[in-house]
Length: 91
Image 1 (cartoon, one colour):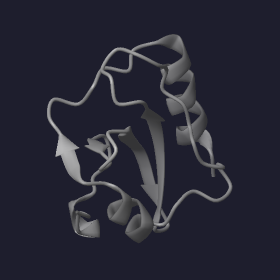
Image 2 (tube, one colour):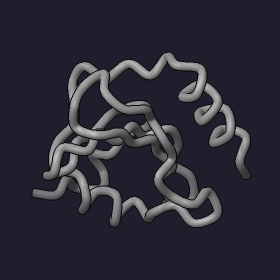
Image 3 (cartoon, helix red, strand yellow):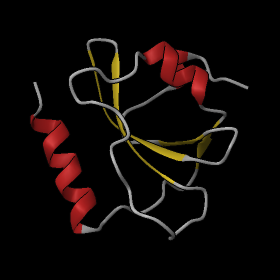
Image 4 (cartoon, one colour):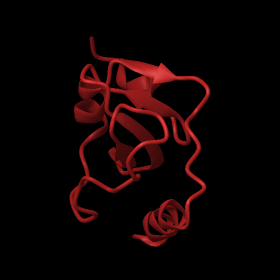
């Protein structure tokens, strides 16, 4: 079941129907920049699964997620911090 686009917020994490975790880092110009990892908490690394020049639209992202995850999974690894920095600084 998809979420309405107006429910997608910067800084929140969402789960797809298949269990992939997606953390929204930035919403700009109707596009969603996010990090993702597999379904098992603490297993696997966060990565950016989309091209920074063409991230998914807000509508597409909302259609791909099933629910918001509370609390938001931790992403304090150096690699995750670097990904957040790259996205924040991307035009």
